[in-house]
Length: 305
Image 1 (cartoon, helix red, strand yellow):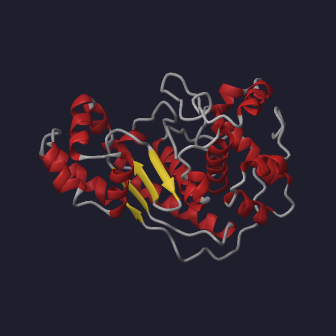
Image 2 (cartoon, one colour; image 1 turned 180 degrees about the horizontal axis):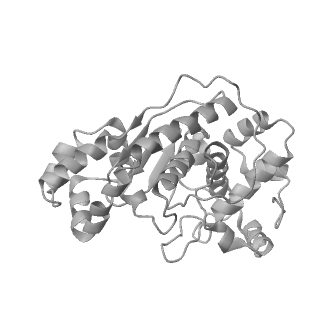
């Protein structure tokens, strides 16, 4: 899962194992037809499509990925129409992000091919880029693949003004979730540690395969405070109230420090492992958060530069 993520690097180099020379011929399907269909309907209605039209002509006629997004996030024609009327600029502005989709598709194919080389056990579920009700930015699951809300992700300029980079790294983050254990990623009531490791793993893998993490504001937010932040985190690992650590960012107040700590725990694990391929497999198949933490070598304030 993801809330709103940027797309710049933590500035931490990853010692990835050498890639095989041959790029895998298999590649995930990346659907963007739902975006095109939405904007045909939107333009024909002069920016004010009705709820019934959106339900019948857009959602019901959409891809399996769009149907999954609708099911998992309660996206209906009525809710889209309501959001359009409340926040019309979001949908009008999102058109500019359509321009980068062909390049995003190319870069994602390369990133996911790299994942397949580094992690041969990976499966390649589809990615669906569609238009929703203003949220979520994106969701990824080993069961349901990846769904991205074009209008929601396009509206996150406060995270990264580079639209292409933002789309590539956010989708890479979500794609990492498709490789993780469902018991961790789809846990509806995780602890702070479990949720942070699920998201931190996705950040780590995004950096590994796409070159950057998604939460690029973290250096400015954490620099000089690493030990204090992580000491507080260590005291909260077993809490099930996530509000201090996860899914609490706002455009005017970036947060989600559990993503950052989880990333650093995963990075420490990878750094300390002799066999990086084995380490990546262990990271992606992790189910016991406390055992993983104990083996990681992480401690509050660890230097990972």
